[in-house]
Amino acid sequence: MKILFFTFGLLLLSLGILGVALPGLPTTPFLLISTYCFARSSPRFHTWFTSTSFYKKYLATYVKTKGMTKKEKIYIL
Image (tube, rainbow, N blue to C red; front, top):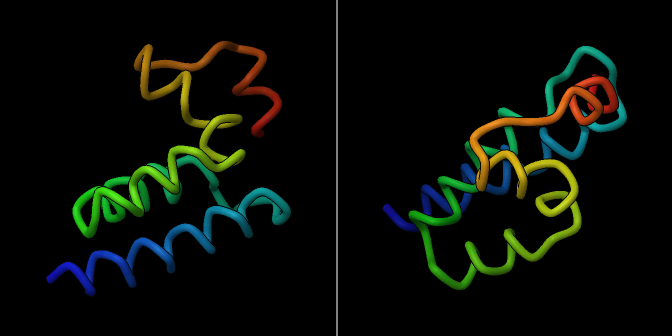
């Protein structure tokens, strides 16, 4: 089961990274779900993912405060 979560997490992470460059492909939902998958697969990979610049830039404040500023929403769109 851990391998399945890890594989699914990598797939969603790659889709999230593509969503940064491709208009119309959302970034945040893919990164949030990949975080969940990495957390379920291994604490080591969860630590790695939460230390990446993508997580810190787009999701860290969202996870801490349960929301985003208007400026962040506009920038992501």
